[in-house]
Length: 549
Image (cartoon, rainbow, N blue to C red; front, side):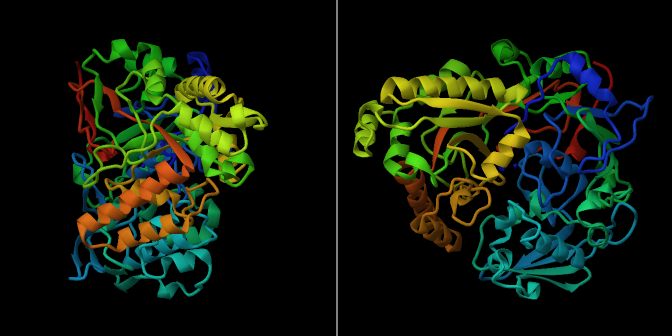
């Protein structure tokens, strides 16, 4: 769910700053904002969502705070089961798959309407997917559609005829999809927000400003009722949603809160019902909070790592990258600063990924690290240029990022004799630097979009917009391509393991540090419809609050 999906931003804050933010409304910034309402009725459900979303455009969204809201506004051909997070029928009520696994025929429901009451058609599906692939859209998740015939060529501009891409409207209620090869997780992709169905006529008319439309046509269970910067997003039940009868809460507020003390205070005083992210819980209180029935933890498909910019300086040399990885005592990092069940990682794909056994990484070996640095021309660290480690300055997770960075700085100086400068940036500036490869090392994280190792390993293919390391390896790309075409599960796993070996033992454009533990904070007596699952996905239309305590 960006990819560095759980890189939460920093708004230095106190409860007073949060209250000051209540007046921020009507600002013409990027997206539709509601006008201020002085006496606004209380929502049925209030969720603390971290920082303000960067966008509510499914084709452009990458942050988890974006995707949670989008999950309420727009729907795909499939949607997430609230218990298992596996794909179940969404806008498509059924589908057939050809015997060779390459052709999917989706049948849309006959009661599909946009929130203003106009029909949702197969042409809307085709348009939405082609828009993701259109290079002018610049979607970082366009690669999720590269499994379609000619999709990658259309995205990179070598093919201009969109009719050659493998998605077609047979009639107003039937969509056929032609894949390059069998894709075991294709129905999972259809649930992910990037493949949501969007209002074609509004986007064609309004262009980049389409999210300002009022009313904004939505295909999901909720309408966008308002968005006030640094305060909240309010969603209201969509009466035209095909399954509106089962939408549990009429009005949901997503509060923009990054400061841990503020988040906990809002929850403790009953002004918020759910805290989604551990990053907005005071880290120093975790040991005590874990004892409460409100605290819920579970296996989770997420990894924290850092990227090398392999296109510049000494980090072009894999020996240097391996040396920095081998010098780190990751269990020490985890035990010293993390208290929610996180575990040290020496591979990328988290334990528990479906039908996969991750490979072993390099581990910790400072002696070998020093030998590799000497081979690379920097004996004892002499002559190694000073470099920067970049991390985002999120109030909730920012202290953890900083603590980890300081500890790595110390370990590299102690073990290798090299010095790293720490660079903390506000989230938007940080994201811009990552996108431009304007960094040496940068912290990152990834939360699985679907329960398959491909959601992690595909990131570092040379053509993936979320790679952002400057690293391309033809052998790695070939292994990933072969794995995605493989119908034999055992052979597919072997190919993926070979690819991961290149990533975490040989080349190391990234260094995994730890695996997340799943976290949600809510009162199980009052809040219903939240079910722990490895993707930590909880469709908002299934969540409700009982009255009283």
